Image 1 (cartoon, rainbow, N blue to C red):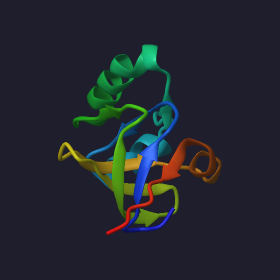
Image 2 (image 1 turned 135 degrees about the horizontal axis):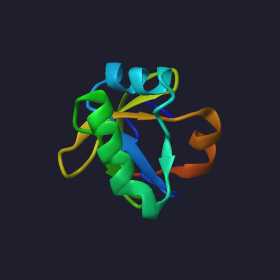
Image 3 (image 1 turned 60 degrees about the vertical axis):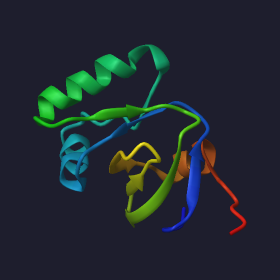
Image 4 (image 1 turned 45 degrees about the vertical axis):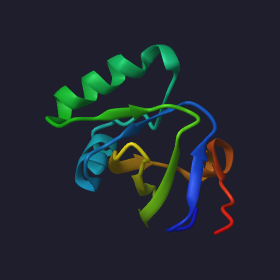
Length: 105
């Protein structure tokens, strides 16, 4: 993935952490499931929010975002509805769960 490009989530729901530090903490403590199936999205976001003492959102497939920053598996994303946060994207996930959206400016 490349910073400044527009992407669309094409599979699963993704946890959106309010800061990179919260995403790192979730991963470190084994709390971070990068992807969530539809039936578990609300429970997963609620559980992570309580454990990390912050607001964790769940972003559905089909949503687009602009990649603002990337540090290893941690990706800062801005969504059209104003959501801004960090998702955890492994190399395998990057290849299989996101499509770059070509924009002709």
